[in-house]
Image (tube, rainbow, N blue to C red):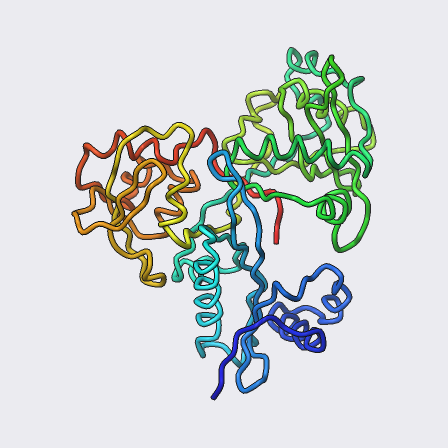
Amino acid sequence: MTIEIRPIREEEWAEYCRLRGDSYHSDPADLVRFRHLVDLTETRCLFVDGEMKATGRLYNFQQSLHGRWVPMGGVASLTVPLEERRKGYISRVLRAMLEEMRDRQVPVSCLNPYVYPLYRHFGWEHAFEQRSHTLSLAEPFLAERLAERGTVECVRKAEAVDVPLLNALYEKNALRHNGYQQRSEAFWRERVLRHPYTEQPRKAYLWLDLQEQPQAYLVVEPAEDGRQTIKELITLEADGLYALLQMLQRDNLLETVEWATEPSFPLPAVLNNPRATSRVEATFMARIVDVSVAWRIRSPQAANGTVRLGVVDEVCEWNDGTWEVSAGRVSRTDSEPQAIADIGTWSQIFYGYLTIDQAIFLGKLTVKDENSLSILRTLWSTASQPMMLDSF
């Protein structure tokens, strides 16, 4: 039996769609027609004696982490037909992807799972959530004193020619958070300003300050059944937030506005009715692929000093062991670790989903030397939880 993992060729596209359709209980024809959205060099499929048995994709993204853009491997489209499952095919594909990322010095990886326990077994861990808000237009949803601050008259429609302005705002905001993906102009035009599958245009608006400088933007889905969905609202100033939300309130044909934010975004603090319906949803998982590369990246608030961190990683043996971490330097050591956790927990801490103290409280992080805590608490500290706006 010969097993091969590689990108597919053009003539294999239909078979790739058939396997995915079988696995996701969808019509393969619906996938075939989106060929223009797929770069075949990103596919990673497993073949047994030349026959495709499992599919996968490995994206080469840049992601915002601790104030900088870093490479991130996006794992997606992992499928195996029912009759081929429990043969270890997905394990082989994931292992091959992790080794490829390590060889390319990609420090981290993210994926959006259907089943969390499967990928947790391979070291990915839940690290992203979003809070979905439903704002009723039965009454003004902004607190009255705040609604006066945003000037709706400073809002104008954004067009495709405004992509550089939109992207500049997006990137400035992204580098204040963990998890955002860097976008190309083509991505903006094909996946943000229009729906990638229906190809229906979305509406975009820019808010300008008193110096007529863009400080915020809003992208919304076409309204449906009295419901308006905010695709994204990025603002560098609070007044931009208020103005753009006020603009939506002026639409008397709408009943509700739906918006998904990071869980730590204090939207209820500015609402007329803080009890507006909201729910928290788990989304992406994250994994440190190579701690020797990832841990060179530190929070801008990181304190000077050295700590020894123990890593338990049963899949990526190159991570397993004790590492000495200091400013810009990560190296193996035979000394006893001052704190130890599995790779999933370290990934949650690295992304800012868990603080050090939360990880300790939950029993996920064992601290053997409390003198290390003053440094450890600052290494990857963030002001907000990570957020992933773009799905893949």
